[in-house]
Length: 407
Image (tube, rainbow, N blue to C red):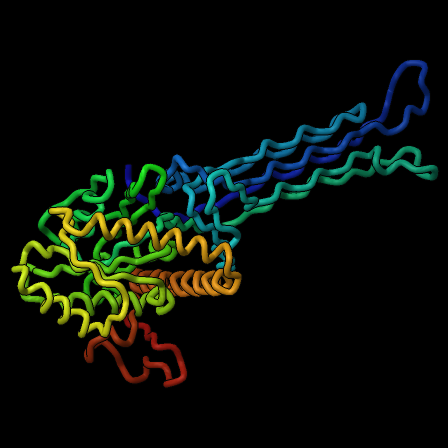
């Protein structure tokens, strides 16, 4: 199944049914009076988080969704039938955003959670509603109100406890295969991982956590290089980040340089995400001599000025992975206890989560705007060579850094 984590759709709630104008007409009954019924309410549009879904591919090609209209009222005071509500099922972890205002309508983070995204139209009133002592034969009705229509953007972020960061070929997919039952593709070329993968790590019989593996980053990812930073948003909901570094890279790049690249790209994407608890995991220790381990570790730690936990492992040989997983499980339990007993810590984490969410959305919106500009033929000043522009085409210093270039 194709992995789709962002879609734009249009939803339209049902219109309300019109009120009916009718009078009672029966033999031997004079002046029967009005008996026109009200219309039915239009159906509303809801979104429900479904734990059985893991992609938004169902909304990739079908973009318009309309709820049922309410029926018109009938004679003999018959009220019209209400329109059926429309329920759209989305994966757990989906954020619903109003495309026009960029307002976050809701965040579906729990299975079964239901969110109203478009309200059905109110029913119209029949002429019975308007009868009075001075108006015995009203000929007045009201039409049903139109249902709410909205353009929505759906963003799915995988829900995981631990997120893996690293360059391509750092061993992230091998690690998740080693510690869980997940079987992501593993190969000896960059960008083997094209979509996020999830794995459930069982530590004891009743203890487990979820690990998310995202496509690797390269230098310049924040500017769109490689697969860019599109998938970094999937780490915004994680509780702990594992920064995997290849201790024995095949190319000429050094391990400290590789570690520095990830920190730089992570900070550019979201400084707040870089504040998330992060552990340094040095992988492929079996590829270098044991007497070189200490020197290589010291080199990387000194370059990053690292003060947090450091683990030396070999994912493919499962060296050190068991201890790492037990420590992660212990961290998760301690974190949960502290959240339950320390209101200040809980508030601090909530504030950090919100900052990460805001920065990630702003960064992704900026990238979308850049793509839209490129498609329309508008370039940034930084992307234009000396021969492409005239002085008169450039805005003043206080204006936006955008110029229009004729082909």
